[in-house]
Amino acid sequence: MNRKRYLVATALLCAFLYLAPAVTNAFTTNVAVACSPSPTIDVGSSTTCAATVTGQGGGSITDETVTWSQTGGTGSVSFSPATCSLSGSPESCSVTVSGVTAGSATVQASYAGDTN
Image (cartoon, rainbow, N blue to C red; front, side, top):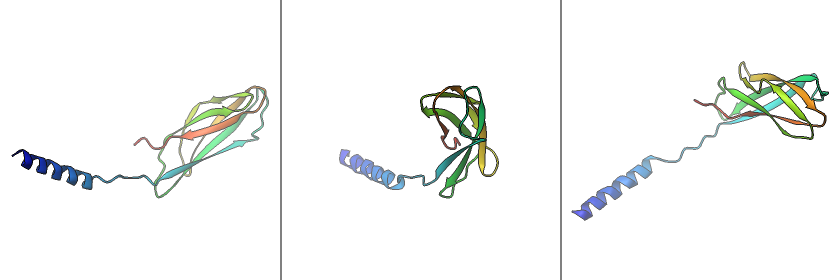
């Protein structure tokens, strides 16, 4: 009887492994950042930066959030607001970037993907 239970359990395990193949998501997104009037700002001045998110691979972008950050440089900037909600077609949003200290700064917009 133990042998019979072992064979049934093995058969069920094999069936489960066969019916549950790995699924990969081929949908990728690209985030483009553009600042205007100019990406160069003085301390105490500001510019508007916009992020545009586009999808590749047949998926779609829904109204989600972009998070802004500084990823390098010798100066610092602030963002108002630090996140923005995508909308429109193509999906985009913008923030105000202000110079806080002198030097250079690299601005990054991050889109984590759909949460649904």
